[in-house]
Structure formats: structure tokens, C-alpha cells
Length: 256
Image 1 (cartoon, helix red, strand yellow):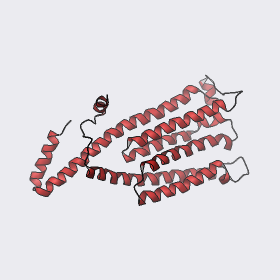
Image 2 (image 1 turned 90 degrees about the vertical axis):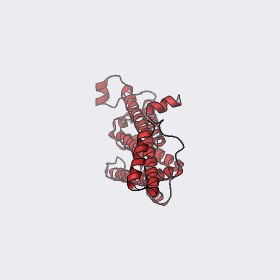
Image 3 (image 1 turned 135 degrees about the vertical axis):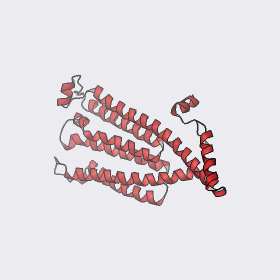
Image 4 (image 1 turned 30 degrees about the horizontal axis):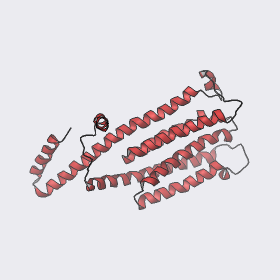
């Protein structure tokens, strides 16, 4: 079965025993990508902070001592730490996974807080366009050429939205806010389960397609690095003309 999947993805032509120096070259590219990701996410959290500071409040309480305000402040510090660490060390997998979860937890908390901030029923936040940020977080993980983090971001996003939908229909035991009327759903604080499941399916589909594309791209990257390394090795012992012919011959006889 695994061979069939690899054949379908087009990755069976590259051997699994990739040389260590190829892994090292790819790791350097991933480190650079992680620094870019860290700066982009820092920009996103700065945007969240500015929008939260400028948004109208329905209470006289200092907005930065509320759960959402403190979460944003804590995430701001976490983002600075992530940028600093990205330049100092090679970030381990557990830290990157924690970062993905933290990103999406913050986003879901912000969406959840909308109904409190504007004094509306919980179903109010289900129509928030802020949900579209999940696709930014999912796509950002593709910069590392590691499909596992894209998959984690997509699954966490789908689960987070499912939890928010579940909260809406269970928070009031006397009124689950569910409707089957699309017009009523669009013009009132009601819940159309089909529409919410469509959002979850869209998140999962984008995640799946991007994961497949990333797996294929990773194998192409490995193949490219292998060929570039081999060409450099050949050039050390032969003239440029002979090295070019040998490299061309290798490309002609390579698998796939």
C-alpha cells in the first residue's frame, strides 16, 4: 500500500537514504525559512494587537487585563522569543509544533471573544471573517518543506472551529440556535450546521492538497540538491566540458 501511495505522489523515484550533506543543505534552507515565518507571524500578532487596541469596547475594564488582552500580550512576547531563537538555534520539532498550536489557539480565542466584546450571542462569532487567517497559518508552514507541520496546522484549525461550533449549540440548553433556513442564517444570529461543516471541509481539503504538493516538492528539492552536489563533486576532478557531459548523462539515466 505504501508503494502505491508513493507511486501516486510521484516520490518513489528518490531513495530514502539521502546523504547527510543533502540533509544538511536542506536544513539550512529550512532554518532560513523559519526565520521568515517568525517575522511574518510577528507581523500578524502586531496586527492583532493594533486591531484589538483600536476596536470599540463594551466595558470600562482595561482591555489588556482581560483574558484576550493578556493572551495577546503573552503571544507578543512569545513571538519576540521565537524570532530571537530562530536566529540563535535550529528550532526543534516540538517547539515548532507548540508554535503551530499556540498560533491557532490564539486565533480561535480571538474569534470566540467577539461575541463578548460586542455583547452578542455566541453564534455571532461564527460569521467572523477572521476565520480566513487559518489559511495564512496553514500556508506559512509550507515554507519549511515539512508536510507534518502543514498537516498539524490544518487539523488543529478544523478541530478548533469544530469546538467553537459545538460551544455555540451547547452554551444555551434552551436554544441551540440551529436553523435550516439559509436566509435566516445570513441575516440573523442563527447556526446553519451545513455551512459550518463546509468551512471545516474546506480547511481539510486545502490542508490535504497542500500536504500532497509539499511532499512532492520535498522530494524534488532532495533530488535537486543531490544532483547539484554530485555535479560539484564531478567538477572537482574533471574539466568543465567533461563534467557537463557526465551531469547530463546522469540526468538522462536517473529513475523516473
